[in-house]
Image (tube, rainbow, N blue to C red; front, top):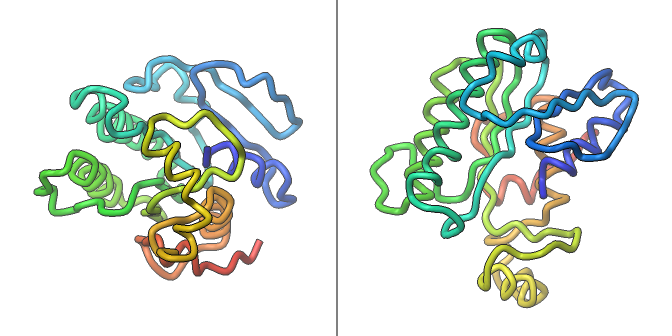
Length: 209
């Protein structure tokens, strides 16, 4: 939902010379700037380590919805996948800027009883401990997917229906996929004034790109 939009931004921007994507399956999309790597083990990047060398900017958008998988798998995807990738990237591109798609409510105290909040907090803390050149963490609330898609569960189907009303009554708890992707791309490319961007910061960001 977000990674694809950021990819489009990267490919059309004149200052971006090459884009490397790591994906489980071929996208079927071709572009002169694009290097697509099909990789199945998100816990081990040794076999594609050369592709992680000399990277300037990383957008890490891997995630899974609460309730879609077991507690153990959620932790593996949210925390372990992030840790494994960040360690390998840091070893080959220590000066990289790392943009991480987190979520509203992430708890860096790591004490929250809410699975999502605790695990996102753990992942955030690990990334900050790596001391990349720059690290930016984005904490959106409900992301309204501008591009139509199959919603993952009933609550998301309901939110899609109610979105026009929610955005009027409670604008602080929503953000569109396009606004989020634009903010992430712009801050990644041009830098930002803070490390953590909450939902209100994302909504208020004025894109410079």
